[in-house]
Image 1 (spheres, rainbow, N blue to C red):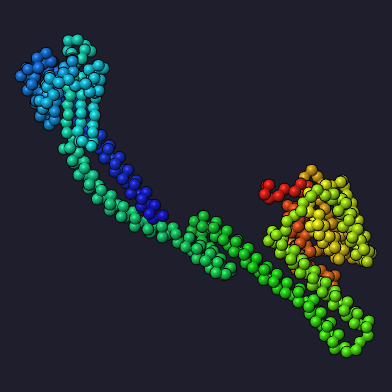
Image 2: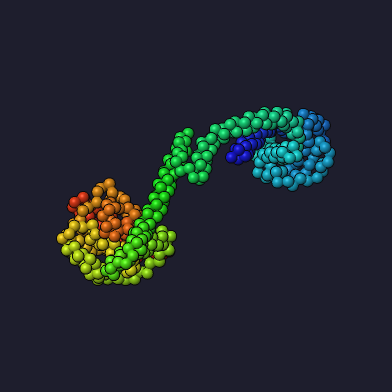
Length: 465
């Protein structure tokens, strides 16, 4: 940034210096040209009066031409109507013809011409000579070559002095740039330090850099990101702790049952069978937890590939409820299904079956004996909707935003008693998300719970989107 500022400032000063020099030179050249034009007009009048254009050997005319050339410290040539040089103060071109564009323009169109060459430090001046007796008739031209070095010297000298001032000014600007950049970059360094601490693992750090509006916005974004990372880290630690606890619980139960069998010595076969049945149940529970953890891992890593095909969703819902009816009947819970219209959709049959099964199983587990579970299916032109409502215990309002979190249980004792792992709703939400859908929960304690799933009728993969 410092280099960019210095380059910009130096270039700006160089452009300004060149522009001022050109303007100053132009003003001097214009003044010099105006003075020369006035003297040229006076010379032409004198030459006309003395008849020099008709007699180039007139001594008075020759003296006038030489006098003007000396006053300009330059070269003067007089050209007649035929563009022949009749007088050259340098005596080089007398008797020669000049066919230069400027001379032709003066002779043919009466055009006055001035050409300044900064490289050669010279000014070329052409003034047509008009007849005093015949209006508009051009009888010749005055060509003047004047050196401008003497005029440019003071300007160049002043320019060198200006360069010295500019150098001092640039040094002052560089010092100011350094101070300003240090002041400007200080908030960014503070941000960088805070982010470095966060990258080292200190997610509790907070950034409050409000020197500029932009740094204030960055601070808010960084704090929000760090907060989310901290929450994610806490969730990860809690998840690991929950996994360890959930996996340890069945193993502990198996260990206790096995130790009890060993300590019994000779016991009735029926008691052995009862204990072995309990061990088998705990192994099944352990296996279920591991399977669901693997399912969640695949969902997190996008390792799940949907096998999407056109499916009759009505038939699928009826089949799911048919499979779960025996479980519901053990507690005298009525399973109801209501379909408002035939629904055909692009879904992964197995994955969506798992998601809906988890929802209906939860509705049965957390219901009251003799209650009901109602599943409804509806659709519009874009989505189909699955609603699972129950007459169960309901979910407190403060717990509803957490029900899709892994291992979260509203009533942990009741969940373990019913065989729940706290992973079913997380899996259901992940599967619905893979179908580009969404799932919401509505509940009041003591009045039951309703889960609403919305999924597009036509699946569009991310590659096509």
